[in-house]
Image (cartoon, rainbow, N blue to C red):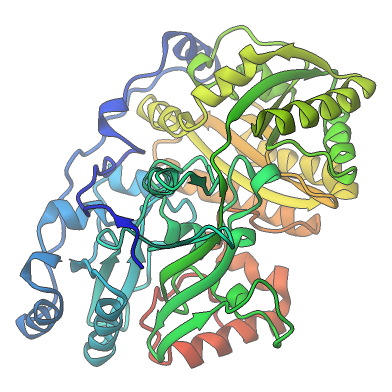
Amino acid sequence: MTQSSLPFTQSEMHPSRWGNPALAGPLPEAARGLVEMAFGLDERAAIEAPAVPACGLGDDVLSALRSVLGDAHVLLDDDTRRLRTRGKSTPDLLKMRAGDLSDAPDVVVRPGTHEDVAAVLALAIEHRLAVVPFGGGTSVTGGLAARRDGFAGLVSLDLVRMKALVEVDKVSMTATLEPGLRGPEAEALLAEQGLTLGHYPQSFEYATIGGFAATRSSGQSSAGYGRFDALVVALRVATPRGELRLGSSPANAAGPDLRQLILGSEGAFGVITEVTVRVRPVPVEKVYEGWRWSSFEAGATAMRTLAQAGLLPSVIRLSDENETAINLAHPDSIGAEGAADCLMITGYEGEHDAVAAKRAAVTAVLEGLGGRCTGEEAGAAWAHGRFNAPYLRDALLDVGVLAETMETATFWSNREALYTAVKDALTAELGDGAIVLCHISHVYETGCSLYFTIATKGDADPLPQWLRAKAAASDAMMASGATITHHHAVGTDHRPWLTQEIGELGASILRAVKADLDPTGILNPGVLIPDA
């Protein structure tokens, strides 16, 4: 039975910035001094409310949508359409700041049920409309910039009304959630039941349950709770061909696991309308602490040792020397004096006895490998600012600094080669004045992710500048045998490299699935699926 649900009204992100408009602000003084010394300051104003192209849909189409959803849930106003244009990558924001709303949807529709979603897809097929499923709008890889050529119009399928905690099974420790729940909303509903999902990506405050599933999200506590795809036990999906229900048991040998076909499909195969996930009791204790290492290599070796010994804490992340020096792990302290070594953050969550035992075991290993614990101050500072880094990116864009992130993953034996190759590629393209930082944010027995942050003086038109740097780094990832993305998904930005990663046969399999589930190609066209 339905346990509880939330109203669909919610705060909106700024259309040309990240997050809460009230939290947008200039660079902190310490950071401003660092930026002025490195790049100079070039104040750049953004067009605050760029004009939205007129809706291109006819009255017959709009009437059909209203007959299914009701007048209140078919929105044509400029503000709503502007807010549902693209995601929050630096290219997305640069286009918005320049007044480019060419990707704006013709209409925003808000279904309230699985059946509503299915009805909208049926109308989209009938009227040849492209449909972009919209959760939190936090995509950073062009996942919301669908191709509209060949279609009569573009519909943003906003899942904001679908916010129910549908069912809780405390015996099996699972919960079924609707896709429009944002991270904090899902955690609040679960907390009423004494439960937690434990999925905290940097986008946590705005990203949604459906988005987590559709992009194979990975949270900052992945070492303890697992990636989001590892938490999913069942899915309900509306496709243009009909309903798909997947996950009737915790494990099976009934052929290939089709849940994995939907996870990471980015709305190209269907619209996820329910997600059943594994949950845990709300932790009684949470404690985070800092460690110092003489080098990135030494810290990475310590992470590998813990992972392969089965001793990972709930949170573990390691900044390289440059990121440590700039204090990027503490966004509220950017520009303050940093150290010359490498900062590691470890975190422990759970019952008191379990936390104490794991903490003691991890401490023994890390001290034995040469790590130096600095106490809980650094961990508390990281936890306090863990969702704030995107605001810094916006403040940098305001003063003419091009800033963006990218991530990849590889096996432990290839980590150093990949790290060097990507840094070299970015420096070669952007020049020696560019700042390239890195941290390891997710670890496994066999390998780890590498998360890069890049800052450089922006050209007069910074978008082509970034696209060249992105291509150079992506080429380096492929040449190094790594993945094009560990947790940001493919979208449109990574699509040119996907065939190189999965092979032409792999790409043809994706095209075949797309053709079967979405034969008219209405779902998020141009996203994920490589061209033939």
